[in-house]
Image (cartoon, rainbow, N blue to C red):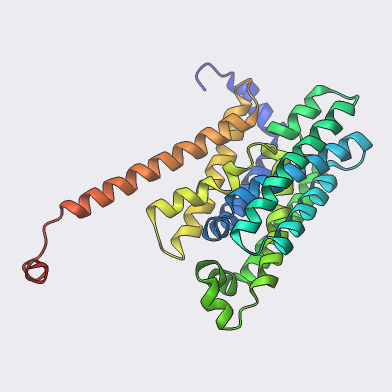
Length: 289
């Protein structure tokens, strides 16, 4: 941010404060729910839901209604279809593979028919830093609070079902019901994330932070904390950098998120390398013989 006009930058901060708050909340929520996305191997599902969310938002834009509401409807439709029909991983991937081009095609059709500014079209795909007004911020905060509270309520059975679904089912954990609830929460998170980072790059907030956290820790407490921290830094940092530049917000968020992931991969490799070089104790050496 060398050469930035700092007085102007401070003024711009005041103009985008709603977006900064929204990004901070989405970074935390996305980081937390992303842990379960990784545990349940559903990164592909995030992208599939985002395509239907994009189609719903584009339809709302064309009809002149609330874009966030349209995005939520699209996300919930996709989440319900995946949650009900995609109980097994193979079925889920097939369903997502069908939904993604359908949703993207619908979204492009609606945008082609939209007669308004091209900036509104582009923002649905890549995000906008000044697109969050007070009503949208209130809706985003309400949905995010609902997702956080719901995750806390189902945390233990959802973790059990995510890590060992067969044993969880044998213990009486309602896996199908949990799957539908989780997909609904994921759909809501994707819908509100699309408004900030865009439909094409939503994975940077819902997958990459959790993937990075899992590279440096296996702790059931530390992984969610790190994932939320990484998501927060990526989202807020991306907006703060975008204010001083001329590029859309999404390249900044994705770059920061990817950089964090690369650093975590390097740390993981260094720790493993150090462990492999560590000399064995005499007792272990005797056992090895």
